[in-house]
Length: 556
Image (cartoon, helix red, strand yellow):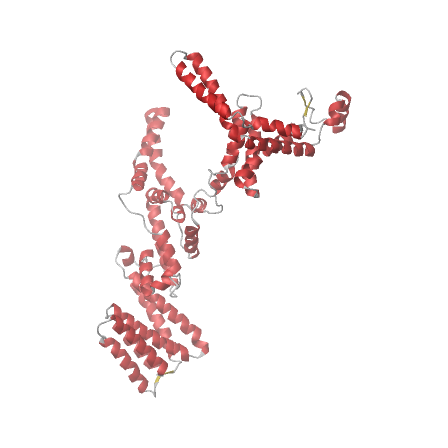
């Protein structure tokens, strides 16, 4: 049974353990008028919500008269100032009163919220003056007051009404009831109303502390799917966090980045059928050998006629080469002639041994040729491989296509692994090197996100690119944190509580703090929390706050 407010304003509270029947009997005996008129909970909530909505609407409609209210407050300030400084500031306050009086007169014909509330009360026969009788009714009434502002500034969608209508009403009333009867109550109600709409954003930010763009999140997920671990700074793009991870992490950070490089290299090698963490010379040589053996084995099962299609395709490759080269290199003519010669020896067909000889010669010539000539030789190899694929028995075709894909990808890896730098020398393929090699193979395919390496190279370049090693303000700031500030603060705090021994312990503890912070930042649970994108937080400041502000202004 809720508390009951009597007609004279007294609130009667009954014991919680008193049976409802006994309460009802006492009410009917002592307060017969009240027992007949006291509404039930549902009715009280409905009436309170409706009357609150009417009051909130009146406050918004009366907003144009706000300057009149401000002028009234200004006049009160003038009276107070004149009473304490009549000689010094009296003339200024007189001028202010004349200005405020003009404002009051100008807005005197504009109805304020009080005028509109009165009109609504008369029109509803006092229905809009209804006062809540239950706790639920009080909440409903306050929520009702904020709903018109939410509707006006944000529309009727449910999320807007919940955040800027229900939320400020509920938090304002909760704060008011917690401070009821004290001088803090008005301020608590205002603060609660302003806090309410911010709660969803604050809660989302607590869940996802570092929101990232959808594009960056997609690239981070691409790398994770490839088996590449990321720091929270890399995943979210927060550079200050990346500097903190790098500087405070120390050796653990260095190990993490080295392991990350191996994971990225493994992902690249996987596209060529290679299972390794580093693209070292022996790994690459073994991979090319195995792929070459696959080509030879499969080609031996196929007889390729030196037909018009093959001849025209080879001629087209040579013409393309001549369009970008002043002279045709002897190596290109040699392959053309050698192919025709080998086919002529076997009744116009290229068989396994002939194919093997052609591929071997092309490989040797490529290693000694310049850029355009290398491309022409690879184009010729591609034409011959196409011809083998056209005539290969169906049961071997899938293996042939896999071998061709692995070979094509090995060329990108070879290009990436032969770049300058310590990491390349150690067999680590960097994202920048992979991107350059991918673009070199097919600029158009990379731009369109096609090919086996495009997504991996783009994600690696965007997420894993190393930070500048020196000369940056964020890095210097983090280095200052790790260089002595914690030790100084710890020593000072220890000295304050324990003298010289305490200072030593405090300084020691301070020295240990940065490495511990670095290890914590790089731990799996912390990385998962800081980098998660479970929620999409809305900005705390929002134009729809104008509705909340307008309602609060009208209430005051």
